[in-house]
Image (cartoon, rainbow, N blue to C red; front, side, top):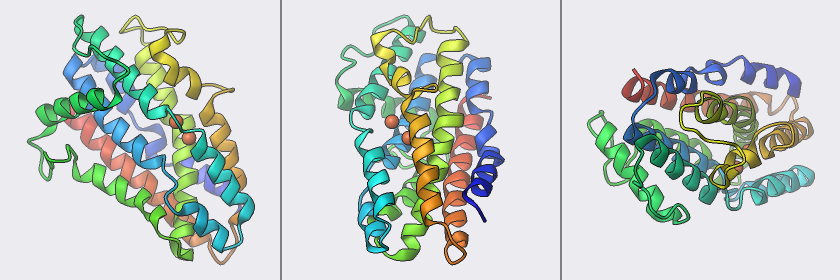
Length: 257
Ligand SMILES: [Fe+2]
Ligand SMILES: [Fe+2]
């Protein structure tokens, strides 16, 4: 298997073309529903940002260049949680026509309010944990990225696969999906140049962070992939894709139909 085969596999997975964001634009959900959607999106993004011990895992296998690639991707994620919270709060305010969020720069307060919308909208679903405002599907995604805490070879190869999958998803599905429903659908009067939309400005397009992450993740996989580990790398990519597809299914069904 070549890195390009893995890339093609990920781009052919149903998660990569999941209807979640198209349905969002078509259904025009109310403000609290948008808040709930953003809660689960922010939870997903937050668990993919920290490297935990992944860098050490790569270094222990003498994949030093790949360890550096990972470190540079992780470093570029600083501030993204803050920007995402501001964008979410601003969008919910616009949809509601009220100042439901008063301090867009207070990341913690914004996230707590988004979580409250999730509990209100999805709290009755089976397995929903009100203490952590999480669905079983959120917890499964966290588990997949939580493997970065382990430095053994098997976990490290799984993590390389999950890294490639999340960077391809971010660049080819999640960020374009957000651009579609927040900007292009024209529902909220938002503009990419609005200061509150800094998150998308930084992430989207040819010069955006995700395009660069995608290229770097492919380069890292090229450096690591061989016959001895390809089954693990593929497995890790599938764990990421399957877990996010399952989460999107529940959000789509629970909030957008
Ligand atoms: Fe980011
Ligand atoms: Fe990324």
